[in-house]
Length: 160
Image (cartoon, rainbow, N blue to C red):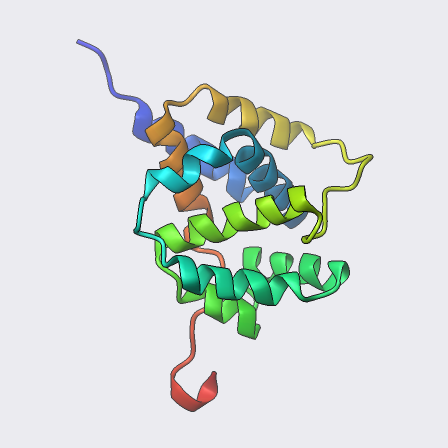
């Protein structure tokens, strides 16, 4: 009888992700989305509120590259900012789609790209290897779990 270790694999990978620095988390997300990005959107067809995600993506796209990086860091670190709170209000699938759109923007040059000389840390490389060995559903679960807690809590009413 085979033992199902998929939950253990995801937990171990999430723990590794949680131990990464903010910039390593951003690099990890970029690498994963560039490798499996075309598979991310079909994973939850219609579940992501495309128009809302596009609106937030467009807000980020209008910023300078330095501001774009700052916003991404704030979201990953769950720091309080308007864009981070807007992201925090998204559904799990919308959060997944937002990072996919950022990766697409990086590829298109509208979002700050990875530095040409960037070399991933050993921790990022190791985590990418873990993810590559997972089945597709595990990969999507890991990605969703990695981005779901990012962003700040939305504020009510006039506090926005």
